[in-house]
Image 1 (cartoon, rainbow, N blue to C red):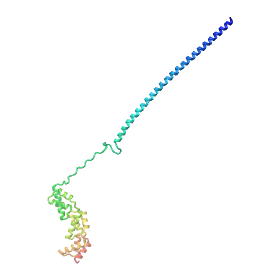
Image 2: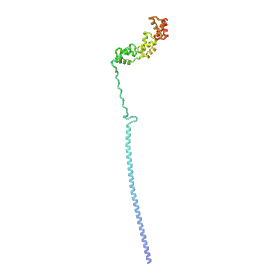
Image 3: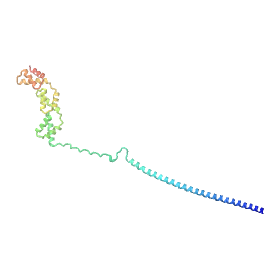
Image 4: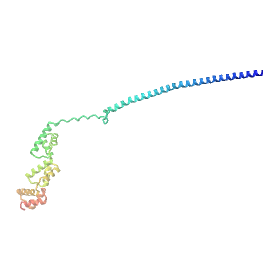
Length: 252
């Protein structure tokens, strides 16, 4: 019995070992299967995630390309606008309006009376010298209005100093004058003090000879003592030296 028991025990132990080995194989196979499924899921999700990332990257790239396209589209517009405004040229709105030319006055706005007064003034100056005031008085004496006479004086273009000089030379041809006497006579004729002095300074008279001529004229009408003759010549505006020269010229 003991032997039988030992054999049975050994057989049972073998069976238990076999079952344990089988269970261990089954467990390993189960564990291997679970591990493979997890790897498969992970591998399956990997491509999906890659596709998702690629899709996202594609969308981002498309968005960037769209933005770049819009920017590129907008930039030529700015360049076109810049090209339409050449450098150095002001916009049309800033160009100042051109000034209209001033209306030209009529070529001849003088009245008939003014024209005739001017023609008469030219005729007078062709025959004799006049001062400005003397010419105006003469025109008014002829019947022109003061405005017509003044128009003629203003537009005749006379050199009044030269007119004074001509008057001084005319006086000296017909009568002797001292320098101061000639100046007074010219001012009496209407010349200004400046114009009269210009004539006295430029007429070229020899005032000693003028004094001698004056002394001869006095002695031709009445008798004078030397002192009286000298005093008369000084009264006429000659200097004492000129007067003495004149008295000596007639025999004193």
